[in-house]
Amino acid sequence: MSQTPITVTYSLEEILSRIEGKIDKLDEKFTDKIDKLDAKFTDQINKLDAKFTDQINKLDDKIDKLTVEVANCTTNINNLDKRVEKLEGTQKNQIWTLITLLGGSLIAVGFRAFFMDNNP
Image (cartoon, rainbow, N blue to C red; front, side):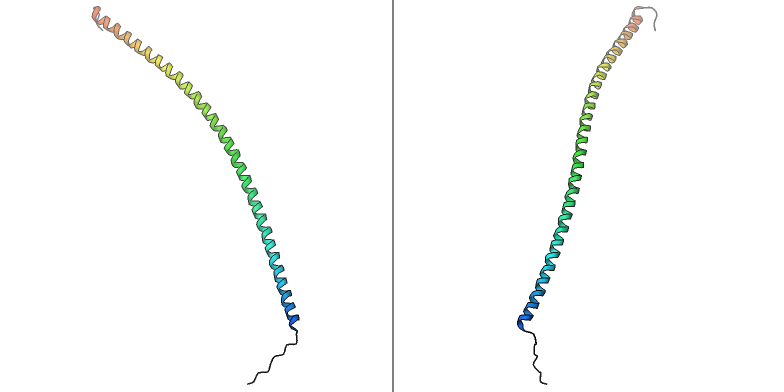
């Protein structure tokens, strides 16, 4: 089995130029794909940035509203403290009045029991 030698009818320069052309086309394709991916990622990052900025702004608004509500609650608590102080003062007066009335009643019953003939 003898093999016959293969003859190439193309010149080396022509083959190398075809290979170089194919490499250039592949390079262009990869460059285009990388540019498209870069554009997509940039777009997605910009969208996410806009969403996060919007959410942060909404959270800032909510925090501001909560701050106002906390200030209102603090004011209401201060008002309730004042009302409780007034109520405590009123209750003290009522207790002293009750003690005075009970003391007076005991004195009257004691006076009647010891100094009058009419026993209760």
